[in-house]
Image (cartoon, rainbow, N blue to C red; front, top):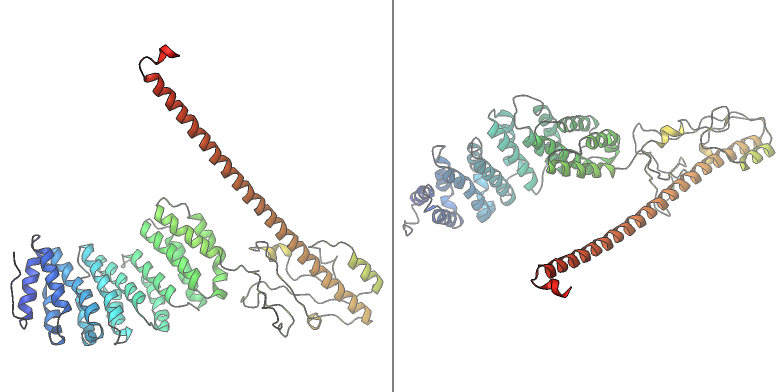
Length: 462
């Protein structure tokens, strides 16, 4: 069946003929190609009538017609780019009319169309595209439309060359409130949008992060596997994009939640959970080693930059040192003896850590924490002599040196154990490979013997 030749000026007639052909399976492919050709060669004066033809189709049309009317918007955006800037609002409106469609293929075409428009039509501000989509997100009551518009907003944020991070941070609290409402049914799609916003803009608010993590952890136990997967993706992206000083405060709870759900019955959910878990394990611990580059000067307080960026976290400090009545010789002799890492307050009056070592060592992972103390920062009580002050300071440095040495020893022992384990695994693998080869050889021998026995007359020569 040949293509009907229509005068170029009569664009509405040509488009309507193509749309009618889309309803017939025999002419579907030909009509699709013809409609795409019209869209690519369309002059700017015909943009309005062309978009009007695409928008007039309704739900009574067959699914291929409805899908192609949205898909052609992607072709049009890629072909004409910024020339369509005055018509962006009309194009987004055409997409929003299709979001209630029961056919998932039509909704997927809407998402692709929004992504193409955002990618190729860059002249208008991003808010021109984002605002009508966000308005629909908070107004739609239909579950299909909620799902589609959430994915459309996510696609727009992902495809935009430049986004206003401050606007997205303002939008995030509203979305977190929306996902708690029972009227919004498309929870997984909204979680996908939350993850996209988190990965695009760095969240710097402690309260906002707390709400984000609380919601994501809650949905890890959802009955909907898609919601569980999307929640794990939110935690994965939050670990990568959130402010490090704030993310470290939520590491323990996130790791615990992901570890409890890492054996999900759905494979793709398990993979996402484990990926997020590894990402959170890479977040620095409370006592992560933070050293300044070689040659850089230390801070005025004399402390190394350990834990200084952690707000409200445990920070090693020294208690006030009381005057000592012992002599310098007794101080030096006690300093040379072996001291335990943790002692009671009565046993180490010259210097005690403000917090017990077991508390300080929690999430520690055998990392060595360098402490560089300036003598001016030691709060020493006024004794009767300069020798007593010097003796107390000497013991303080010896205590810290012993702690550091023992931590180094633990780290070296763990490194040695890992090396031994790797060698054992390697030798075991070699042994298994050798055993497999022997078994294969035996199987070949058995096969040859069975073939010989199956040949007539073989028994005569045995």
